[in-house]
Length: 107
Image (spheres, rainbow, N blue to C red):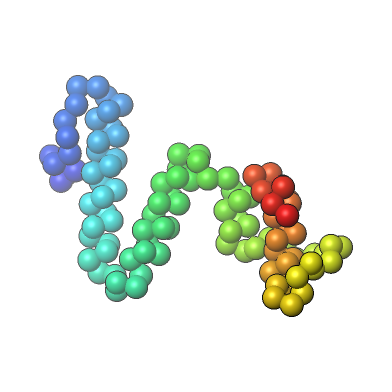
């Protein structure tokens, strides 16, 4: 009810809904952050942002899963070009970026 009363009014339905969503989202964010430790606020903000973007269809699920997991580890046929400073696990993750269309030319 607070969002209905406090958000900016508009005669255009789509704009009014956007104003309500923005006000409600900010209200939730503000109230949740009051109960979080300072060190956890950035993580909460990131998760909230990803949730909003996923709801709008702006986050590719394959890219999101890769960010969370680093991809599924399989045998890596490509030799590590920088063994002295790049661990095999990290090199494997770099190679697996080729499975993500947006990152196909990464390495």
